[in-house]
Amino acid sequence: MPHGLFDFRCADERWDPCNPAWAAAIGRLTVIFGFGQILGPVIAGLFGDSRSGLRAGLAFSAITLAAGTLVALSITPLPPTAANA
Image 1 (cartoon, rainbow, N blue to C red):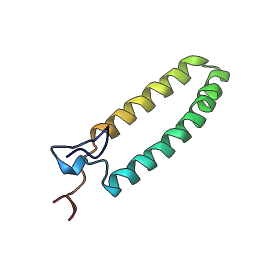
Image 2 (image 1 turned 90 degrees about the vertical axis):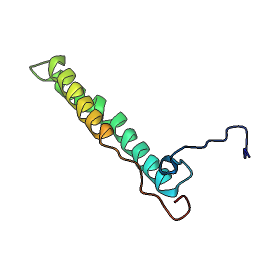
Image 3 (image 1 turned 180 degrees about the vertical axis):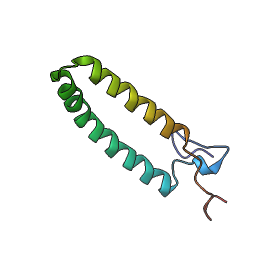
Image 4 (image 1 turned 45 degrees about the horizontal axis):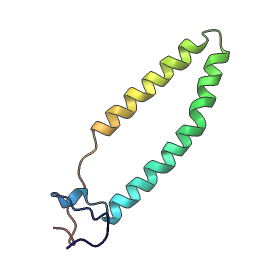
């Protein structure tokens, strides 16, 4: 039975957004994303002001994006908890 207008159910309970570990992970990712939003333009600007110009800043951005992609691909489901086992 749905609990609201936007009820979300997963076939695999380890991806359940109501799991406290899931909520904590999303919170940490949001903070990390915020720091990236602050530091990214500063670092790219420092590269842009260097002799290599924007080329180094764009290369740094591409490397950072590739590293983030590898981290995202390595994410595994949370282990089942007693509530959703």
